[in-house]
Length: 459
Image (cartoon, rainbow, N blue to C red):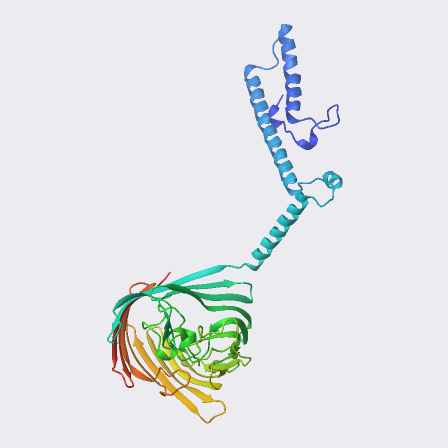
């Protein structure tokens, strides 16, 4: 008998008395009985065995192999049952007999289903919150009477973004800042306390390259510097911003931030690379000692809104060149004073390459007192140039601003101008050391010399 050709398959198993197929182990038992029984009977009758010892060993080895195959079949059947149970945890019979009533368990199941649905929606939108950090520490001193040399912690800036969907994006800039606020020359707060400001906070919708809209709080598109460099000193070459573009809470004369709605995009112009920015918002609070917050984040002090329109070109023929113009219009209402119309006209021409930068901006702030013929013009400009040599970048800047002593909105600015020279050293891709000397000439006051050593970093 050749047992090597024996094959077992589930589909050809014989039926037992109950009508179900015989298991493989049962068939093996019957097979062994059929083979061994004649041998036993022959031995009992004194007959020669039909198979020698070697044949019996082959038979037992084959039976062992078949038992292993039977065990594997059982394991596969059990696995199939587990998968079917996981796919349909409730059988049709259970669905029919299950009571349908508002029990606590059903409410919990409903909540869980809602959470699963919410999780699925979040997965579909693929939102991902990204946080980038920036900071700096500065050792500075100057010759102004009453000032002390000190180490100063700069702004701890958390730049937070998220792709809400394919078209919508979220952006914010959360700043932790130490020291008192210096609002228009008026110091408020304690020297060594920290405060938190949300400097930028907006939702952006991108329809295409020609139309993008955003709502919230952003940096006003006046000139170039204000939208190119935000609250991190690590991005900019120098230790500080040009005085014209200094922040409102540090005595700057421009409405650096706006709360409202802004639209921007490309203008079809071929190789000229024209862009536009159109903004409408609350404007800034009138420059007054009673203005605790220059940026009107929640409530506007009047129904009149501020408008700004900016146009700039990035010609393809001159890589790195940008020239532009902006016009800003607002109405200010100082306390116990007539309303004042504010117009800001700004122009810029910048040329930036990886190893070279040349920034030039000029503007005029025009204040006209409503109901009178009084007009106050405050001109200002700065020019900054730098060249990188390996990890070192020496730079030079000259800035100028000239406000009338009787200027109704910022009478403390007066005339100030002078050069700044410095050196930036990039110690690594994330750390920069800067050394800067400033000389500022003032109207009716002694000139001020200042020296600052700063380390700026990103993480």
